[in-house]
Length: 201
Image: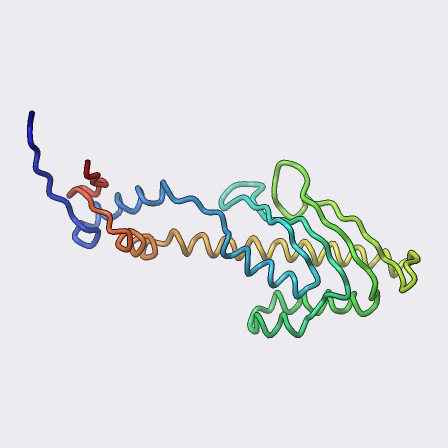
């Protein structure tokens, strides 16, 4: 039986090359589900009239990456003022708030459902089912109603693109070198001199 003494180091004690290896090890085990970011996205969507059930996404460097969601929209639930108070400097959300508010005022009883379909998760992997009706529940037809459906579809897909951008920003913030370093230190991991994780048996 042999007794082997092993000297271990904290992250900040490592050389630059060893730190890079330590960060690479940590990233390999990092699973990103976007849960925290998605909660805020759902809140923003609620101000725009949506009840978002699920957000689907894939990312962040492959063809077909993107985000979409399942949910419902109701014209009477649009609250552009609350959205702008919640996100006072986001020009994209402000534009979407104005667009959904415009349509909601024109068609107060309009609603639709949107559902994810297919293998991918980008904004075009969605099906919309509209209900453009008046206060009596009678269907409204004509060019104005058709345009409202097109505009709602486009605005909804712009919202999905915004959600993906927020997820992407959040992800790259979490895998940034300094953020990874802080996470390693907070967890108190120890390493060998070359940056390999040291496991105490």
